[in-house]
Length: 570
Image (cartoon, rainbow, N blue to C red; front, side, top):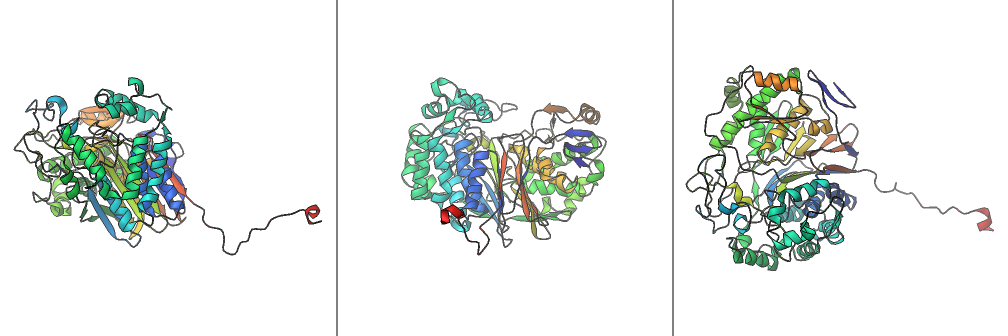
């Protein structure tokens, strides 16, 4: 059972929540920075809906969480309209049309250096840049389903870029980790390495160039990037410095409407993205494997429950390697992978007393953990769960001179060796582990959530879903609970998992590795129809904060009456 201090299980008290959830009757926004979440709630207060709130939050995160997200980035969006209509938007990056399989010079044909290239050209600098996609998707959401206009939802971002914000220790640490690569590019260094050093926590960061770029986008619309003057500035800078992105790549980019995958776990309905986003498929696959077990009886955080999760993760990752790719180039067997029959077949091979070992040659994925997630909901039942990224921290590390905008480095997601399924190719799209997930119960809004974390995303989201549905946690407990992860090599466990449990897992054959965090700052919203409230929650692994809105207009017919004294009347 739960108490105010944390979650109690057979393994004892494993953790205490470090943050608190919020509740609002008119809406809630959860994001990995409080300034971003506040921008979203500002839109709700102005009469906007969940979609307006989510996009305003993302634009503001471009300012205050620039290492994770930006208008030149990419991502996946899962939206549920108030009438129940599901919408999946793929605004993930593609390779430029001029990309070729041999554009990089790999330094090794074996792991662990398989993905490394000479000069890190696939990760840092102008050759690492995929087609910027984020802004196209954000604008389409506002144009099609928002109540407010683009200029309105961008005002908080412009304000915080122009007037500045106080840097958090979380952002400062990201700058420190990337300082050597940021120093290679003058505008990146000028903004985030003043006087050649990372700013101190609490220092004011002002981004006037970024404010001007955002103001231009707000007044001229997204086409100023996708074929207009801003796009030309970016393309010219990339071309001048040896990259392959062109203005034509920007002009022809389209955000795609993808088919949502609708499925169930126990008595709950889930909506997740479809390929080339792999995260949703594997969440469903993991949950279907778990449906054949009494997960609640195993207890949270026990050796049995962690072992079972690990075995399910290994199956999902083995299938990801074998079957997942761009559906434009290969047949992805989604129905089969998520079918009850296939789950039953794979479930029969799980040994609860012994860890399985994957076939040799399954490599770790290079997908970066530097991503962000936003969840927003309003009282009408609109929900937006959106995961966005510029891939690695600060993307390519290149800030385009005079724009304040970081270029992504999504090309690092491709195999730099020619002749393989995930090799670089013109206009090719890479798969993603993004897992923005929306859950309903009996057709009514119940919960939505997501997290950054690269290949650790979908196992982490699956764990949070299990925490709520099987272990009876609150949403706040579910997003903060200790996590585990494996794709077949070491079993990563967060340090809150007791030594006794770690030892028991080792005895079953797991190569246990204690880590500080698995994946990143998870956040979400949850509906309480009995109270007429929406809860927002965010975890300790980032600067996450939920903000909610209650109240409303004055009661109809109320008149303001000025009180006066008898002396005043006289």
